[in-house]
Image 1 (cartoon, rainbow, N blue to C red):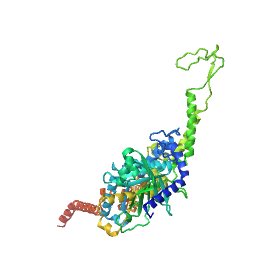
Image 2 (image 1 turned 90 degrees about the horizontal axis):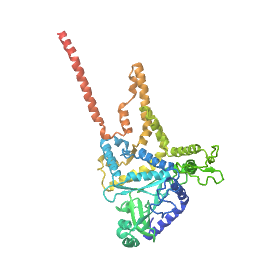
Image 3 (image 1 turned 120 degrees about the horizontal axis):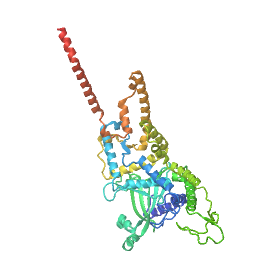
Image 4 (image 1 turned 60 degrees about the vertical axis):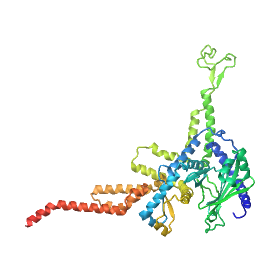
Length: 536
């Protein structure tokens, strides 16, 4: 967007109104899911909900809400496990990755990145969980990444889907984003100080908690000038606009896109994603209705409806424990009070269990129940099960690696580089002009690569069987252990610093060979001495 500040502000407000109108159907759909699955989050159709208000009036069965929490935990543990180094940064030129200095440099970069990502000030773990829940419930989520305000590092914030508006380019990539959000007068003055709107500065004196609405626009800069050292030389433009009065507040820029929007699944010709909750929304609604009926039937079973004879005898009938009711039976002992026949409660429970299984299956919970159901497995069986999981999850989670984690890591490295928190680049990398690439080491990535390790184990088991049966070890000659062991170390995420380089390995092997040769000479010494004595 190019022009005077007031023209840019007007254009951004017009673009927001346009995008807001386009997705009205989406917001109705999201609100329906929110009411039944994720009631604690903000409304989509009503921006002015009271904080602390009850929001779970539509929830009768908590299966879907619990499944959403577990789904978010599955994504966290399989894609971004906080107790593991779930990706590595490497050179884009594979030949350079063989250089030990290059490998150690990128290992340092990876270590520093993880250190700041999981620092207390970053707040990544909690925001990542909120991101995953938004993906599971609504199919779309957005993470904002910027410099920490209080100390060097990174700060993360998951933006509510109701605040963010996606705009795709001709290739289907989100290259423009609008965020409509409120700030209190105190927050406005904290952020912009003298640039803050006058009405916010006045409200700070009398009502610092009063909220004002703003729009943050980020998109490609049309007039980028690489020669400029300020934000005008950056490829991404940033504008903040006050909605009240359509006032332009601030212009800035980014080297990398600061938001990382992602979609769980995407239907053709749709900008926003679709979620597991959308797939099973009929089952969730059915389960809620079944639970209502089940509760009514259960209430009637515990506190039954009584059928009595209409002769006035039982007007004083009491249901208090231990009370003796005279006239409850006739002189022949036949009861004069009966309970109303009920439906089959067990059948209702079975019907609900069917819907629960559908919901759990679509939220991937049953897939992760396999190892718990069959704990007594060999290492080969575990590897096979892991491989199967990798195959089933690859299409779904692969999108998160490409659309979410890749841009996220690029943005994180840019933020750290701006604060000079990364180590000096080796000369060999400077001279080559190589870029970086990301190699994922998450449990999901290793599950996908487990096919190679599983194939090796099966083949090695067969080769050892042949060798044991024939007494011939030649089948093992087909295995190149100098290639296999390093590759297995990579699959199992063994750090480079824990492994010896090839020069050290050769020195060890040479020392072992010299020692064996010396041992042979010692063992042969008596025979040589005897032979020399016999020759004399």
